[in-house]
Image 1 (tube, one colour):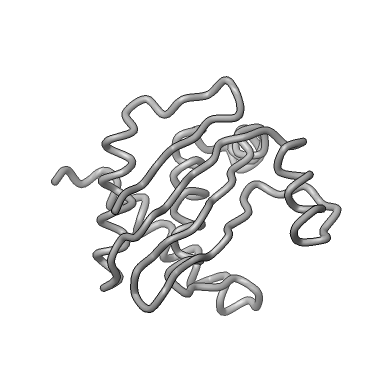
Image 2: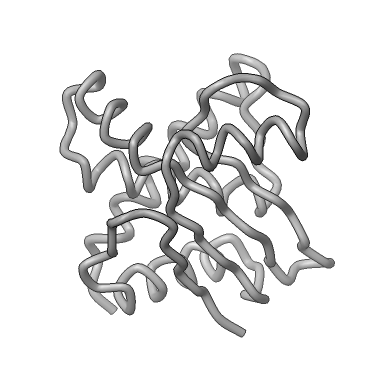
Length: 140
């Protein structure tokens, strides 16, 4: 099974193998196994259309995750607006790469069963995101 990266905008991950390995390690760390996971990098308009068509939400967002997980085999499609990530990085005063790692880990954490609806869930999600960002910098 594998992690795939698709690009609907003029953006490419610099070292997709490193990102793929990192996502695999997040899944292993959470005692699950990797199925087929696709990250689709797009712009606001692309993601807004998906949000409206499939979720009936007329709002801007940085990420939408479609979950195809079965048992503990993590599979899904994770759509990320590169525009939103750039704007959020500026707003949070963090590097683009750090915000990208946060959003990418956020998507896989949803697939692993973490939510962010209530305040407690949001706090747990933020802690997990930080933990997973640190994991990115640990070489295997």
